[in-house]
Structure formats: structure tokens, C-alpha cells
Amino acid sequence: MLRLLILSLLLVSSAISAKTLPATHFKSTQNFINKMVKDHHFIKNELLLIFSKIELTVADKTKKKRIKKPKKKPMTWDKYRGLFITNERINNGVKFWQDNLSTLKRAQATYNVPVEIIVAILGIETNYGTKKGTHPTLQTLAKRSFGNYRRRNFYKKELQDFLLMTRENSLPPLSIKGSYAGAMGYPQFIASSYRHYAVDFNQDGKIDLFSDPTDAIGSIANYFDKHQWHDNGEIARPILLNTAHLKYARSSTNKPKKNAKYWRNKGLNIDQNIDNKTKLAFISLPQEIINETWLTFWNFYILTRYNHDNRYAMAAYQLSQKLKQQFNQENY
Image 1 (cartoon, helix red, strand yellow):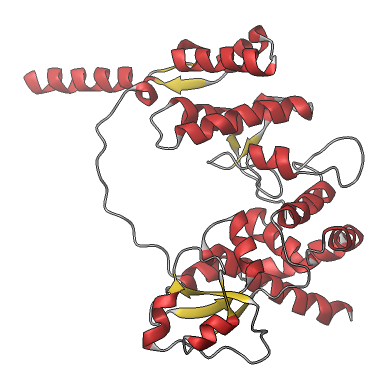
Image 2 (cartoon, rainbow, N blue to C red; image 1 turned 90 degrees about the vertical axis):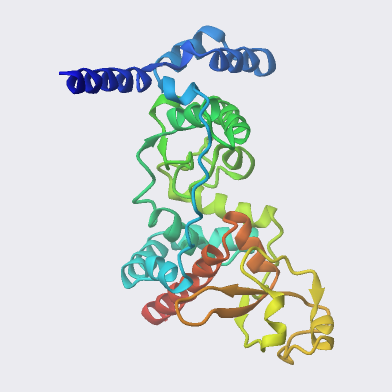
């Protein structure tokens, strides 16, 4: 009987700790609403109504002692590559390219970002718009803004931009869905990126990255252009580094700072057709047996502005080359 009583109390306690309440119940939400009214002239009653329709759990507001978890070993490059560079994704990408050919050509002409890069990004992010996410974005951002998340200040800024974005584009905030972390639409832009880089590429008077591939194509190209993509610039080449030079290859983002002449003077075997003034960097991609090492140019670094993971940038680059090769085979 005593055991049953203890078990019952534990179940009741668990139910209480997991209780959900409207977001407006919490002081932090109320303070945020007041700030949006003061700084951005939102109507308070409208925000109160919107936030009353989403719920946060009591547990989200309770300070917990952090338990240091052992770090997970990152996925090896060969496994990561296998997720994105598949025959299905290449075939779907070539079809998307064919279906949106004139728009992609116009984006390349306008922003000098290659068609294959734009298509590859769409392929990796949402499989060309077929998988945009099912998580209610307002709920996601509110939970991460007002809960015990390490980056809650970042998400609070994204929540602010999300509300501004929906107002600027006449979008219903409660109906928008995206990734588990708040990324949205064909290109999986977070709210601040949507506001800063999304463009009305079909010139219909609105920016729609949720159902309009034309705006998505132009917005991705604009994103890279604004991050200083180098026109016709090379992206990466494989390179063999000896033991003494492996220290120059980083597993994290590596911005090109030193030129080819500098690296030649260090003893690295840099291809002779690379100009002495060209700035270079080196990355190491972990694999099961032996790591891959690559020489990277400025445009590879710009790919990491979309996602800071070297594996992501390399997957985008390699997928783009596969897409270009197959598209040319089928159409020329």
C-alpha cells in the first residue's frame, strides 16, 4: 500500500510539473509583449490574443541544475555526405532546375551566384521545398525565448523579427510552420534572415518563401551576394597534406586569410595555376578510416555563412557539381 501511495504521489507530481499554461501567464512573455508595443508599435491586445493561443509548460520556467552530458562524437563526413548526395536528391534537383530554368538563369544573372549552388542549397535544406518543417514557428520561438534555453536571448531576438516579418508580409503568425529550431520556407531562413535577405523576385508585391519557389531562388542568391560571394570564384580542391602540414587544416570554419604565396613559403604544395595573391584556407573532414583534407577558397567560406558546419558547405558544393553534371548530360 505504501509503495502504491508513493507511486501515486510521484505520478501527480509529474503531471503538475508538466502542466501547460497559455504563454501570457508568464511574466517574461508579458514583458516581451510590452516591449514590442513600446518599440515597434504593436497593438497590445492583438499580441495578448496571439500569445494566449500558444502554451508553455511550467517546467520550461523552472530553473534546473544543468547536468553536463558527455559530448556526442560528430557524424563522420562520409556518413554525412551519404545523407545528402544521393541519386534521388540529384534527380529531384535536376527536375527542379528544369522546371524553374528561366528563374534560376535570371537569379544567376542578377546576383552572379551559380544556378547549381542555388539548387543544391534548396536540395539540402528542404529537398526542393517538399520538407519545410511541421513545427509551429511561433510556439517554437516562444518556448526557446522564455524557457531555460542557453541561447534564449538569440531566440528572443528571432521572435521579435518573426513578429515584424509576419506584419511586414501580412502573414498570420499562428499558421506558420517550420523546423524544430524556427527555420522557415523553401530556403529555411530564420526570421532575421527572412527580413534582411528575402526578396520579391517575381515582383508580385509580396515576399513569399513558403509557397513561391521564385522568391526562394532569388532570396538564396541575394543571401550569398550580400555575404560577398566572389563572381566566378572557385570553391574547393582536394589536397594532400603531409604530417607537418596537417595542423593547418581545421575541422571548424576556416576563413581564408593568408595567400598562396604565404602557403608556398610554408612548404605546402599549392597548384601552380593558383595565383600568389589568392587567399586560401585548409579544412579536415573526419572519416571512419582517414580524414579528407581540402584546400578552400573564399566562396567555400561564404557557403559556411549559410551553415557554419564544414560538412554542410562541402555537401552543398559536391551536390552542386553532381547536379550540374547531370543537368548538362540531359540537356546538352
